Structures are given as C-alpha cells and as structure tokens.
Amino acid sequence: MKKLLPLLGAAALAGCTEGVLDPRGPIAAAEGQILFNALAIMLAIVVPTIIGTLGVARWFRASNAKARYRPDFEHSGRLELLVWAIPLMTVILVGGVAWVGSHDLDPRRPIDPAVEPLHVQVVSLDWKWLFIYPDQGVATLNELTVPVGKPVHFDLTSSGVMNSFFVPQLGSQIYTMAGMVTQLELQADRAGSYPGLSANYSGRGFADMRFDVHAVSADEFGRWAAAAKSSQRVLDAGAYAELAKPAAAPAPATYGAVAPHLFDAISKGQP
Image (cartoon, rainbow, N blue to C red):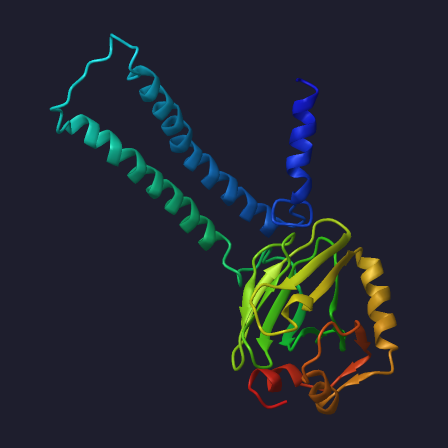
C-alpha cells in the first residue's frame, strides 16, 4: 500500500503539466498560491463537515442505546451560531484572499518597476494571433519569443470579435476587444516552450486558435530578433488586410518590417 500511494499521487498530478498548476513565471505562481490558499480554507470546513456527518450518522444509528431520541427538538441558538458562523467566516476568508490577491496581481502593474520590459503588441484575429515587437521592428504570427527573466508588457486589441489571451503557465488571461487596448505584464522564469490559447469562443476556428511562447536566454533573443529582421515579409496595411481574413490554424510566420503605428490604427479600427 505504501508503494501504491506515490504512484496514485503521480497519476493524479500527471494532468497538471502545461496548466495553471505548473507555473513558469511569478504571476502564474502567485495565482497558483491564491488557488491553494482558497482550497485550504474551503477544506477547513468541508473536511470537518464530512467527518461530522459520518459521526452523527454513526452516533444516532438504531442500535446505539446511548443516543437520545428527541422528536420534539426545534431550536438551539448555539447550534444555529455554529451552523452559520463557520460558513460565514469561510466566505469572508476566501473572499479576502481573492480580493487582496487580485489587486496585488493587477494585470497592468509592472512586475519590477526598476526593469524596462519588452514591449509586445497583440492583435487577435479570426482565428490567429498577431504579435508586433515595436522596439525590434518585427512581427510574428502564432508564435511568440521572449527573453527569460525579463518582464514582457503586452498591449492587446482585437480586429473584431472579443477574444481572450491566455498562457496558462505564465498566468493572467485577459480579454481583447475591438476599439480598445488592454494591458498585461507577464514573465517567464524558465527557458522552454509554453502553449498559449484563446479562452473565449469566437467561431468555428476557435479550437485551433493557439500559439507557442518560446522563452529563451537574452543572447538567444537577440539572435532571434536579428534573424527575424532579415525576413523579406513586410507587415503593412495590405498584409494586415490579408491576415484579417478568417482562416483557421495558419502556419507561423515572421515579418521583418512593420508599418509605423500599425497597432494604433488597428486598435482604432483604421488599419
């Protein structure tokens, strides 16, 4: 039995990879801590309730002559206080943990104010993701490359239908909407490839609206940016108009040049 328990635990946790329970950045780790804190608080009432239910059933079984039969019992102030106070305290504690945690993890709040983040502009299209690197002057489709240990500040908008940008292992899904810009700051603490997705249904191609986030060293990121700059593709108004046409699961692409202020025009509905 002792050998079986670790195997059962490993099997139960096997499905936690590449998800919110397998964080690879400070935001995802903090969100996971909120989840576990809330779980612990809820278990503090759920477990005693289950034990109490079993205990009451055992004590008041028909064969227990010591149990008092009280058919006229109507009210107990102490019992009412116990029944309502514990759930109320649980709600207050869980609500407090969620409220404080959500404010500490304000999506637009800088992870480290002393560090200049990498800026990435994100556009959700039908059914693909466009990433523009304004400082590097390049763009990618359905593929995002970021340096490890450096905050990444995202400005996000949509070409039309509301969508939701989510990288489970980095944390904080956030909506993208036409005509406005939302902001999000994330960071990858470990090198690797992390799956990203749309968490909001947006039509027939929604299931294939996925992308990969490649977290690499600072030197590798510099080499990647230089290689991307050598691409012959140019992301201008004409190229964007082609991208905006509905298409499911397009292959990743890289653009070596981006028209100035293209993201601002897209966010205003005037590409």
